[in-house]
Amino acid sequence: MSQDPSPPVTDRWGIDASWLDALDTEHTVEQATIDLLREVIGEPPADLEDTAPIVVRPGDALEVDEAVVVLEDGTSRDVDGELPEDFPLGYHRIRTPDGRDRLLVVTPGRCWLPEDRSWGWAVQLYAARGTGSAGIGDLADLRTVRELAESQGAGFVLVNPLHAVGPGPEQEDSPYLPATRRFRNPLYLRLDDVPGVQLTDADRALAAELNGAELIDRDAVWAFKRAVLERSFDADAEGFRDWWWHQGQPLQDWATWAAVADAHGANWPDWPAELQDPRSDGVRRWVADHEQQVAFHAWLQWLLDGQLSVATGDLTVIQDLPIGVSGGGADAWAWQDVLAQGGVSVGAPPDAFNAAGQDWGSPPLVPWRLRAADYEPFVESIRSTMAGAGGLRIDHVMGLFRLWWVPGNDPTAGAYVRYPAEDMLGIVALESHRAKAVVVGEDLGTVEDGVREAMAEHGVLSYRLLWFEDDAPSSWPAASMGAITTHDLPTVAGLWTGSDVREQVELGTGEEEQLEKDRRQLLAHLTGHAEGPAKRSTPGRAVEAAHRLLATAPCTLLSATLDDALAVERRPNVPGAMERPNWRLPLPVPVEELAGHRGVRSVARALGTGIPPL
Image (cartoon, rainbow, N blue to C red; front, side, top):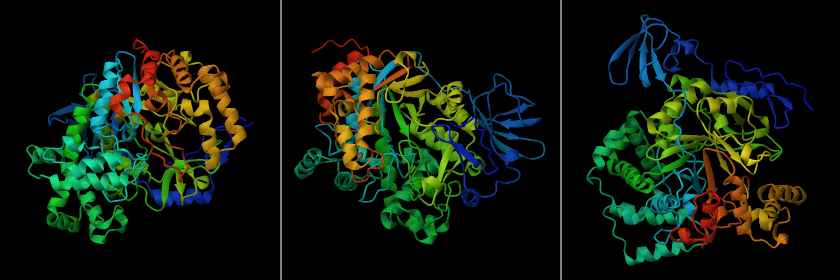
């Protein structure tokens, strides 16, 4: 057992010289790793602390005296030493007598929180197909799920990331490796709700064929939808041009990247040199020569904006923010000076669940460059994901504090790099306040000391799972979202029948003896029964028992998956199992039939809605 390891030493590049694993064993980072990461990060500028944004709350002391603050609305206020308690929230500019001009972010410090506790459904939207879908769950299906939730007295719906991937024929299956965290995936468009679309009998036959497939085939779905959308494209549709203009440079960058990706592939470092800089004359000339192609991708986002608004209605829809983006994607192209170059990515160190560690494939933001960029990539990603839905779940929220940087695809040779967590949490709180959006931080796995305390201080809800917690749900903190499982963990039915253990053994992602031991312990914790089918019960009863246990938690939010309610045995994703059809498993029941499904009603009753039994 390790003995009171000292806090890690962090250098001016933000690199920790050591780290603690889940067993509190201290590990020293190899000097070769530190040297490599320093080279990738680059030397922070000497005047960074005098030029980087200041993030404060009203009433806080300032780092500067006798300054003029130019507010967002264009008016000015003099400040001297500290901000008044009534100072307006927002993104302002502070100007000092010596000529310095820097961003001043005034934040409420705490995220917006709902007044009442509530429960809701967690759904992998791509899996929630309905009779009108075309092979994949779409925004019209989200509307059906939302209306179901409202009818049952639920307060929210939690969905997987809806962010866009590359527009080419080979679609990325994982929602957690998008090309952008600012714009949405046109795969989720309902064609029947697109103005001007006229589907032929052949179109409807193909849509039905795609909808009947055993697995979700994004490539085939996108080929079909894109063909219909291209022939229906109307660059002069009423309201489109005005909406596009108001989106400004971010949408122009996305639409440009997507149009160039159609011509040269979805990896910008492979493009012709004159197109690799988004602000170059070469890109401007290319856009001028391909106006219709750029407009098409902007039009798709206009459609998505309208359909999402209808889908979410007045209910809180919590959208998921991935930890990063693909290195060849649109955000990486637009912000290539802020993202780390040189073959490093984000991941996780070795632990008890994965001795080789993990490489998630996304290039990390360089902390000092992020500050020098006035946090623009972070602000836009947070704001865009919250937009129009009222909730945000931050995947791997520990990344606001530190991230495991993986050099050369070897997670065992990585190191933690520190981020300006206090500033980033303040920005999250400001965006949450403005959007009236609840924020949940996915703080699962190894969480260092101080993270959950900082989350609580800033009003970010913790994430508590029956899967991981030893304490009874009744003792969980109120400032949290409670759930049984996630997309990366077994379903209750998969545990109950033992099928999840059998699949893991077949995939080589665990040893049968240990997996079976863990399964029995977890079943005993979830339902009070360790024997599974031998108890002559059913997966449905196990699911209901687990949710009755969950209902005892005092959490602000309680989340139930549709996979569990439908007694689905295969989880959406098994991390590291590349040969498995991860992110491609549809739900076994059309969304229109969910309201009458016994399991769905049972879970809703267990979480306190009072729906009478069938």
